Image (cartoon, rainbow, N blue to C red; front, top):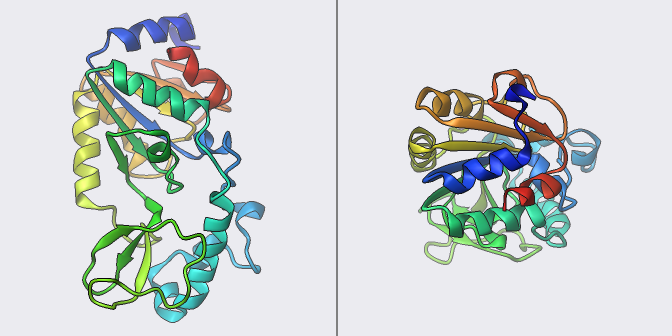
Amino acid sequence: MPNGLTILDVRDRVHQAQSVTVLTGAGISADSGVPTFRGADGLWKNFRPEELASPEAFARDPQLVWEWYNWRRELLATKRPNAAHEALVQLERLIPDFWVITQNVDGLHAAAGTQNLSEIHGNIWKVRCTQCHSIRPNHDVHLPFPPSCANCGGLLRPHIVWFGESLATEDLEQSYAALQRCDILLIIGTSGVVYPAASFASVAKDHGAFVVEMNMEATPNSSVMDVAFQGRAKELVPLLL
């Protein structure tokens, strides 16, 4: 690993920090048994996610898209936060300025108790009206079709950033602000090669942050990290406590 630093060295740095930002991806959820919904895990009735997770697919056949999301909700309803999610909640209580940015839509950070959170790709347990654009939590495992807005009666869609859609401005602004002010950036369970997350390490480093990667295997960005650890999130993250 760069600099020969151990996880205990990083723990000491984290506990001395005034501001810590965390970026998480599929690797932290995998330790809760969440499938990636890519490749074989993501196939449903021979559809790939790219064929269903788009505004065009929803406009063409909203019932089909909702059937897929109901299937995903059924899978995710059985999953619970793991030791990595819980350790981040404990760190949030210890560090004056702590912010989590997640690419995951499974809601496990919120379920664990994380307060300062940007879910930049949305949350599968929220719905958004296609007419009045109101957003509400909804934990029904199966939504009957067509799900309608309590405000205006409009058709509801999953509150997910689909292929071809932009991330919410508020989420991006919160994320970049957290990256620019943090002393330490922890990158957990993500290869960090998909934009905009691919730029997050550079943004933090440019503003003087110490950047730590924790992933099951080395990534294309590992060599530019201040330190990189390989292993399961549920085993590595609790070591920071």
